[in-house]
Image 1: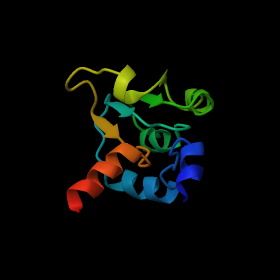
Image 2: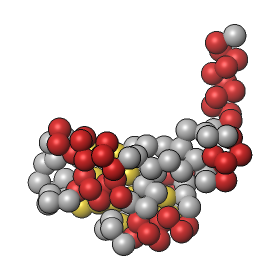
Image 3: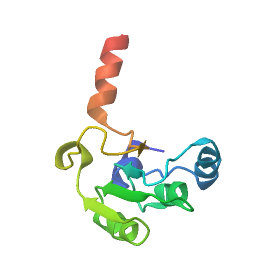
Length: 116
């Protein structure tokens, strides 16, 4: 996707549902685990991972509208930037689900400079 289109969506590319369902089959989630998605979007992926388990779900989402949708399917939501506005204690979560936005000019520019 073109950079401008990606930036317009704030780098939002949800993990495909079929990928989440396949991964759920191989992830061993302990009862009473706390699950965290720091780029949760609308909360679909973590909701699928948690379905049928005795877990507590937490999400962080930068976009206000997506965070509102995530509130409908996850138990705890923080609307904000996970890099700057979210802190967690060591070992506070049993699973970190992470599919961050990858369209960051600064990071990619730094990598290009190192390669050249």
